[in-house]
Length: 527
Image 1 (cartoon, rainbow, N blue to C red):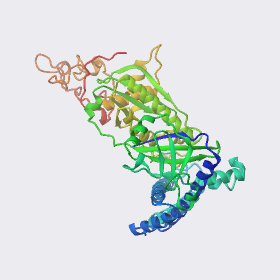
Image 2 (cartoon, helix red, strand yellow):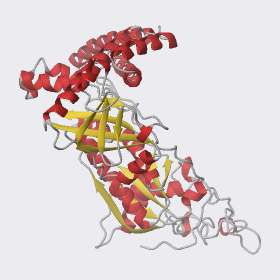
Image 3 (cartoon, helix red, strand yellow):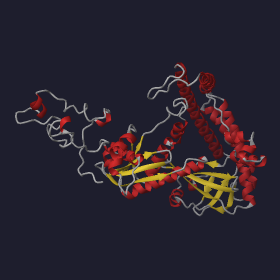
Image 4 (tube, rainbow, N blue to C red):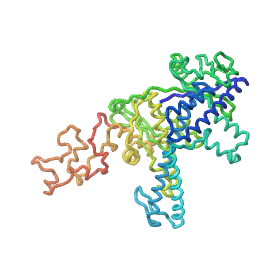
């Protein structure tokens, strides 16, 4: 878990701007060369080779700058490596689905969960060509994985490709060159506990003074002892400023990164640090104060509060977000919606939040759903991975626990059992709101279905099933009612055995998840 805060450099002098550009360009060239060398050598990496790389970089910068550059190289290589495995899995899923559909006769209908054959011979031919292309791509990726080589662009592949079509990107050659150079600069320094203010390379004092340890070739620009340059601009972190001040006061590690925004012509400083790992709590403790069930959708979170007995409390809440536009905009929208959700949860006094354990990794291939383009877009639009990562970190900040539940049939059963009873002239219920109740009840250990009325006389014994009327501690609650002579009412009337006691045979959905014991709440449902 980490924390990152950012502030802008204001009123920088031309000399400050010149020094930042020179340091960033010099260290960026070292980072580019180190990344190219590290990504080409494959698995021939040892501690000796790392020491040799760091020694070469130290001669051109400093020991701490060399350590920051090599660590950045290792992190970028690891990220590219994970991307390779994800791309291999995606190609494998596509090849498997294409092979399945090509093996079926043209025009054959699909079954539940399995698509059918292609609609025409022309489409079958195009997909057969695509199958060969995917196999060739998979072979190339597997070869790179086997040799340990990655293909990575420092500065971003998208920006590199924009150079070949500047008009479509809305850039001029000069504008593109400025963005490209700024993206390849390196001005990042890891913190070190025990050192002054938690960082010796980029040091920020409690009064906001920022000083940078200059690389050896640029130490002639220093305006402070020991080869340091002090910027005229002061930093004042508004968000989490007190937490940052507490860390540097105790000389705890804080990492800093200086970034230049070409479009706004502004310099920024980002401070980040790690927090202790979240301690897991028991499920009973998380359920003690009730919880909030959250249904994740493509454009909003639908949340409903439940008490510890599984009864809905209050009205549904919806937290909207827009996942169109740039990656920064999507990320900000998601963080804003999660912040609203967590603040509301804190105000209600619950101790946990229940979410679905969603994973669409097997369902995102475009071949699985055939021509259902809208459905594929919907699946891709639900930010399951980001929600998991951000919600864990942000919930820990508010002292809330997370309970992940099986997402099977939550929307269907929630709408069936909770949407209509809770809908009124003053409360509008949607399918997603009802799904939030179903998720919460499943997290609390209750069945999703509401307490049902006894069946009609001709479908059961005359008095109704004991399961829905008697407490779980009542003896014989799963048995049939008996007359005074010890026989059931139906046997006494017809002389034949009945199956009214078979709870799986009647009035049940047949899903194993709903056949646990009935847990009667201490309070009645209130609507």
